[in-house]
Length: 327
Length: 216
Length: 60
Image 1 (cartoon, rainbow over the protein chains, first blue to last red):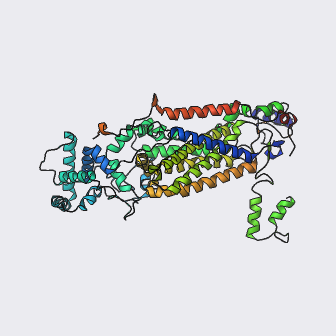
Image 2: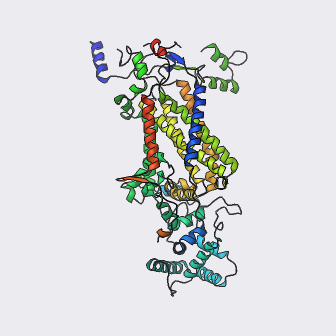
Image 3: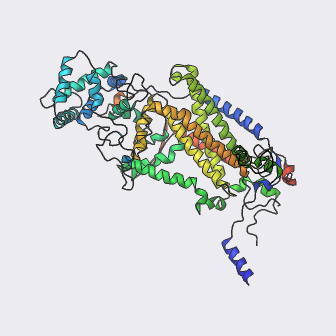
């Protein structure tokens, strides 16, 4: 009676038999090295053909000069925002400064985990290159006036000027209350236009460039970089992470990462980056440990695509296929 | 233990030894069953085009490395100023697209074959790791283009990495750092993970079909 | 403040918009090609002797 109950229990739960050792199966000749060489030749030819037919994109980098020529109002507005401490970099938080808490994931301030390891003073993005300009007494005086004022006064001047710029759409008549800010911003534009800003903001600290942190932060504080990118469908809410300039192939494998930015709650969340990171970490772990996840790991059994893969073997060994448990 | 393995793990006098060399030799020879490192036969169920996508991925990786090596020889700015350099850059881009295409098709095939069966869970895990490390390597490649694309990608990606604290160490706005990760550190990681994956495949052999026995 | 009229002159690629989804034609072609290749790999016959299948190959 014990045997009967065991058999019944076995039939109910249908235990999957252990997978046999692959090395115990009958074999046939298979030339792996020839297969690899053929694959290499095929891929090389395919790559060469695709490269010759479609080439690859190379849109020239935006320089400070080209930015100043294409969007001078944007340069002036950005310089003013840096002085006012209202630019994206100025209010970023770690790793550049402590002016914001940064993003949180499930209430944990994950942005603070790295600390302020890449300190950048946003106002210095404007003031430092200007301080290096020689032979401009009004500029020197403006810099001195700015340096002598306290931070409350500096912020008041710059914010007032920024508001005026935004209202007027570019040109603001001279007025008391803006302090030295209009002159500083205008000289900054002149410096950019002349090419004098290239290389002067390097984070490398010496003659040899290589670390573009400060110029890139300045560039991304403006609107021109983003406007240029959005015109090419590269924006975060345009599935941009998958895309490339022009008609070139992008990064199709980033589809799931960028998908979350297109939908709520992420599309309207201040913590979207941290949240998407956390979610993708979980989903990637799910993919990695899929064999250990009940249900998911059984999908190949429920939807037997494998019957196509092994149809010749199943046909040739029809007597042995489809067997489940052994008693 | 057969004579071959016994010889591999014993010292010169035939006794078990404390030699590190002997231990390592034994460990290496036990990684795959004898004759399975580069076998000239496969189980008779290995007869489907789906099986070629692993080797196609490997072949694409070779082309990626070769085209990358030529770009490295020319230097960071070479492909901007040279027609040949631009062509090599195109080879590098398209071989990467093919690498990911073949890798993902390989993943689809392995999923529908439930290729983690028969003690092959680690093979699957390492395979997904190879995918993830490849994405990271491609990412640093995009950051190393020294053009508009690199400017945009770096200023966007910094937000994702900074939001979880990684950006404090891995500075995507620093092309000097990103290029070295792309050309050395990450390809080494890809290589190690790939070798590990292939050794595991040779060790366990190709996963058998569902519900069959060798004697059938 | 934006200056849309002075954006880089390079043209954007061609895109397909379906609801919340937007994909470039190139990326779409790549994904479709991958699916087609996957299906073909499953259904196309693989070269090899039918004899081996019938006689079960050689025992290890």
